[in-house]
Length: 79
Image (cartoon, rainbow, N blue to C red; front, side, top):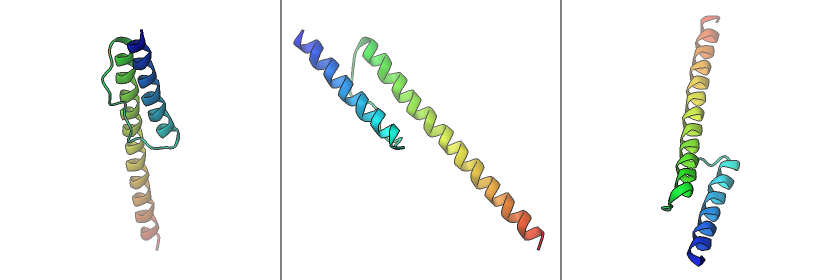
């Protein structure tokens, strides 16, 4: 029983650390420890969510850069 409680506490602490980082806009953190069963599923889903957010942010940044470049070209063409 103590092992289960320790495992739950370890998971909650690591999960909370990742969520707090996400809340601050830090998408570099992942759940790294090994877990079993449902905790492993939550770990994988949490890490997949962070990866997806990283992908979305990168796409937004790329699109913003393309718009900024296009706007600059239009402004230069109107001179």
